[in-house]
Image 1 (cartoon, rainbow, N blue to C red):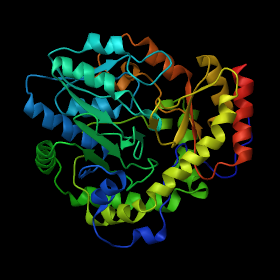
Image 2 (cartoon, rainbow, N blue to C red):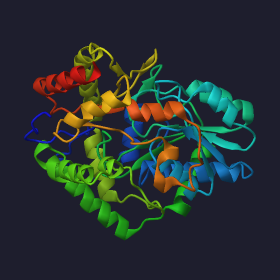
Image 3 (spheres, rainbow, N blue to C red):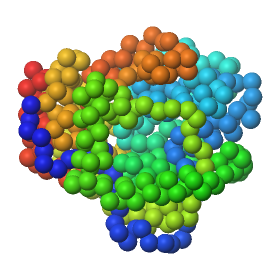
Amino acid sequence: MLPRRRHELPPTAGLPLKLTDLRPGAATLAADVAALLGTPPLALTCSGTAALLIALATLHELQPARRRVLMPAYTCPLVPLAVHQAGLEPVPCDLRPGHYDMDPHALRAACDERTLAILPTHLAGRVADVDDALAVANNVGACVIEDAAQALGARRDGASVGLAGDIGFFSLAAGKGLSIYEGGLLAARDPELRERLARTAARLAPFQLGWELRRSAELLGYAALYRPHGLRLAYGNPLRKALRRGDPVAAVGDDFSLPLPLHAVGRWRQAVGAHAAKRLPAFIEQCTARAQRWLPRLRAIPGVEVLDDPAGAHGTWPFFMLLLPDAQRRDAALEQLWQTGYGVSRLFIHALPDYAYLGGIVPTSDVPNARDFAARSLSIGNSEWLTEADMEAICGVLEASAR
């Protein structure tokens, strides 16, 4: 095993906050991000998951006879939990072999007149195939919600992701690039639909002082600890403790519970996000430049596949998603890298039907490609603190493990 790194690297590249970001200011976060991305007006929510829940509740009001929501079988467990809390039925769809997109044949087989929405997902900052989801949705009268939680700033044919479908949403959670510790943004091209979303949000997510005080304290902690010297305390030590007790789900933070919080975001956190958002375009450019620097080295490793974008798309690079030849070689690499502070991790531990705590929420499904993706994938954080020596150490382990 590699020696433990002295300072902890994060598994994702977040935009570090500055002391000046914490000063009071105008609560213009949603408007500022919309201007930066070139989108219609965005609505701020308390999390990306809350944004999804509000979107689902709104669409269900418009089509109350439809209850099924299609999603990739490898995605964040919060997605089916949001669907369940909205009183709807999550339906996992298998992936294309060795890819993050939903399999076209499986998607068509799962969709019918009961389908309310399809959720193409821009996983790990990569840009998903929304066109296929749109074609299937149009055929059965369903809607498309783009899950861009991990892809704030990604573009497709020059335009921001999140706008090709009926609704899109982004996350402002810790480590997701721009962050107010927990937050989300809702996008919709249609003005009438935006108004409906706003009414649903006002009804479901009123301001709650207790939640805002908690999130404000957590944001202060994030501002202080999202640095290599603080991440050992906030991230590395809890990770290693969970792995020692044999709980990889807790190690990556996949353990969630219901009910999901729903509340409005206070003015101070909005101001913090607005101050930091001024640096977002430069931050995305820097992440992309680092990715272009490291990608040739990663792609040169025999047996390792690095996930990338389709033609005409430019995703963000919060981390690299890699597929190794099989689960045994992926596990061999993680045995040396996961606990040593290099920012190497797993995104989600299981395909959705395989989380024990989702039993009774996610139906048992035959999703072999999603299970294969979960078994062979690992991630490498693309933070500004990753050095040439760090990447060489990581690549050396991958080369030895992938043989």
